[in-house]
Amino acid sequence: MKARKTIGGIMAVVGLFVAVCTMNGCAHEMIIRGIGVAVFTVGAAIGGWFDFQEGGRQ
Image (cartoon, rainbow, N blue to C red):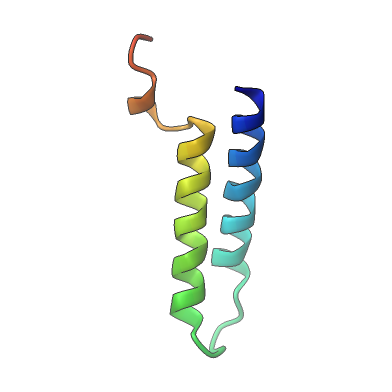
């Protein structure tokens, strides 16, 4: 479980940096930013940061 949270956290941080730190006006800017957002979303899902994954907790 700890490895999942660590890997998810690293993916989320890397995806966030890619999405935010892409230079304006570069070639394929929107594709690179989209990939960054996708990596962030997958990393957050792997890390279990979304509420719908915690079925029994209230």
